Amino acid sequence: MSASTTSPRTISSRVRWQLLGGDRFYIAARWGVFILLALIGTLLVKQPLWPFTLTMPPVLMLVWAYGLFNLLATLALFVSALSGLLNIAFVIDIIFISLFTYFGHDPRDLYYPLYLLPLVGAAFRLRPMSSLLAGVFAAAVYVSAYLLARIGPNNGPAPTEAVALLGLTLRAVALVCIPWLTSGLAERWTANNRLSVELAEQKQQDALSEANAYRDQMRSLYEVAYTLSTTMNYQSVLDATLVESRKLVPHQCALVLLSTGQPDELYVAASYGASDLDTQQRLQLGTGQIGQVLRSSDACLIDDVSQEPELAPIAALAQCHAACLVPLRAALRTYGLLLIASDRARAFNTEQLGMLTALANYAIIALHNAQLVYDLRQERSKLLSKEEEVRHQLARDLHDGPAQALAAITMNVEFIKRLLERDPKRVFNELDKLGQLAKRTTHEVRTMLFELRPLALETQGLDVTLRQYLERFQSNTTKIELESNEISVDLDTKVEGTLFNIIQEAINNALKYAKAEHIWVRLKQTPSALEVTVQDDGAGFDLQKVLESYEKRGSFGLLNIEERAKLIGGASEMMSAPGQGTTVRVTVPLI
Image (cartoon, rainbow, N blue to C red; front, side, top):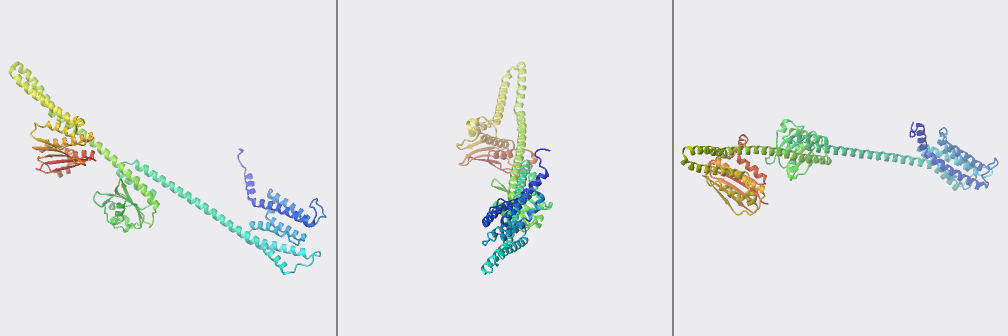
């Protein structure tokens, strides 16, 4: 056994010593009484207490007897076999004090206050009724000792004066009442202390429960944030929001309502506890709580959601009462709301509403993240598709232009070699034709390089670059005119490059498909924007039909203009009709 191990016997002895704390204090007080009794006795009989003799007065012999009894009571603190003596010690004390009263023959009644120690000790040990009986016993013994001490042969007759009898009666009543009152008060105080301890323990338990609940809520919110932050699918975010909301707040029905894109109309994007028919409903906003929450962007509690006219199409809410409405809002824009409903009245409080608001904030951030990832993937797909389209277009242009021209030049060179042998006179004419073909080919190649990367944009600006570009079409049957006022603003190189690409694509589309006689390119600067317009007088087309069939066509150059305009923060406008030409207008803000 290790040195630190404590035996059960040692533990029980230690507990017993602690339980005897009141008795130990009582023994210490008894020794104080013993000293008082010794002083009073020696003063009354005017004899020393030491040495002990059998002939000394009874009062001094009682002092010695009381001292021996105190030794025995003190020994009972350490010997468990004598512990029963401690339970009746107060009775023996009363008897001793009464004997001192009898043998002391003190007219001043100096021994009377000493009754308080055993009676108060008994009061803390006994219940009020038992303490009352102890007080009656003490009063009876005291009165008997007091009277016997005064009617003895040497003391004369008992006191008969009314004042003396009244004083004796009052002292007797005090001896009866003191233990009874003390025991009653002690019991009340003990009960109060016990109740205070119980209340403190209950408060501690409540505080611990609240702390555990708060910890669980924070853990749930952390799990919500982690779950939503790792979910990149739009619908998965909504479904995860409803799953996590059930962990935070118990409920019977939950809906995520988002805007359909139409004014004051919502649809059910995700649901829990709702039927398939409910999820197909469209809700029209009015002046009810739903519309107020979306307009004010403040979460709120509803006492009876079944009475809301805006939610009447949702049959699952007909049996519900209390509800939480939390708007889904980000960047000053409200996308919809989260609705949590219960079939119990007043099922939710402001704390739960706050947790749902935190959940909604996590959800809207996750929705943004999912939307950004989706947009990024879409843009990546568009970039790859556009790159592939540019590759094909470049291959077609090279095949139809320079490649054909180089093949023709090669054939002409071979033809000229033969002419040198057969008909030298024709060689000079063929060389002239070959030179013109080479010049045209060089012009086409340079035009293609110019379209791919106009270096003039970086040094001379958009206006000059457009003039150089349009000069390459002077030999075309289609007349292209540039109308430009003074462009004083310095645009970013990327913005100028995008505008040039938009103009280039619009011109190419007009040349290839519109069969226009005139194309007008206009640049107009206003205090707040730069406006670029490309207009032709060609055949035009049905714009609505083109937009409807865009997915089937796979690619259409004019629609790429809108995407490019958005990339530089601008807006595009396209107007066309059969026989009325086409106008493309792009506006880029300067502020």
